[in-house]
Image 1 (cartoon, rainbow, N blue to C red):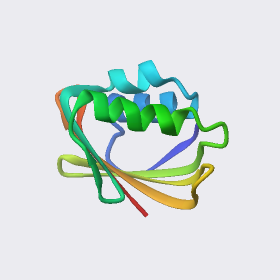
Image 2: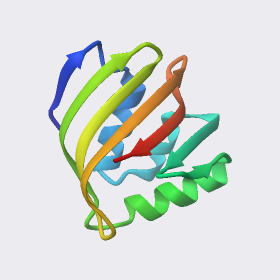
Image 3: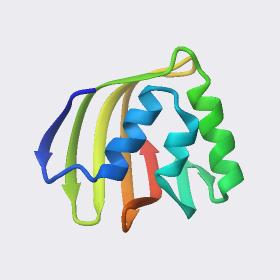
Image 4: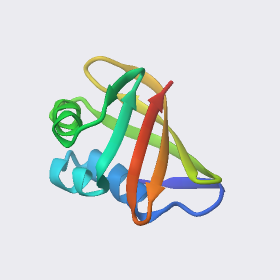
Length: 112
C-alpha cells in the first residue's frame, strides 16, 4: 500500500486501519478504534462497538473490496485520506477523515 503525503505525518492508527482494511483483517481493523468511537459512512452513523463491527464485517467480507491510490493530509486534529475504492456496491473516489484520541481512532467520517 503506497501512501503519498501532501502535508503532515500519517498517524500509526490511521495507517494500521487502512492496511488492515486492505488485508480484510477485521480484528486488526477494529483494534485501531477507541471503545467509544463513532463511524459515519455517507450519513449513516455507527456509535456503538457492535454497530461499528457489523458495518466493518460487511465491508471487509466483500471479496471485491479494495483501496488504491492513497493520498493524505494532516489538518489539525483530522487526518484526511483520499483513495479509490472498489466494492460490490461502489467504485470511485472516497475520503476518510480520521480523528484520533491518543494512539487510536475516535471518529471516522467517510464521504465521496
